[in-house]
Image (tube, rainbow, N blue to C red; front, side, top):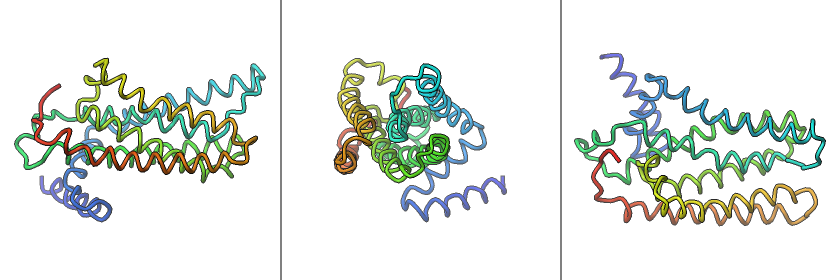
Length: 239
């Protein structure tokens, strides 16, 4: 028990250096993930579709010999979308009713999950993109890819958090919410995919990517400011 308390205090101090006000909740989630071993399930669940994606594109280009030109930018966009799997796990790792006994609001807990979501996404996705970039000889595109990864994953996570809160697995079964999520995310995914194919042939593609990134960051900020109005006062419960 003494060691557990000390480990918690150290984690709180470390987390508070980066995100003030969210240290205790973030530390609690980090300790839960590591002690339960859930972190390995989350990473594996996220990594397997990424490896499958690379194997499919490799098969198309190297075995079927189709000149599809799947650049590293394409993988960055797909990673930004597939990171929804991480948020789904994080929102479902607790029995949310337990938060009713703590002086925490639902928007605060959701933001804590989002901070951990971004951290895990970057921790897994960046090494993946570096590895793919090395194998494809496109490490020169890594800087642009990191911009795409950060902006798309932040936007997708914000939309998912706003629409589903801590009840992602059940709320996405609602046809209305699933439609809203699709309308918000699919156009962005299509735009990023098209830009990844035209990057080498269109001199203005990089400007379009940068412009879209700015729009996604702005949209994410607007969406996150709406968390309070949508989820404030909501009771923690099992969905």
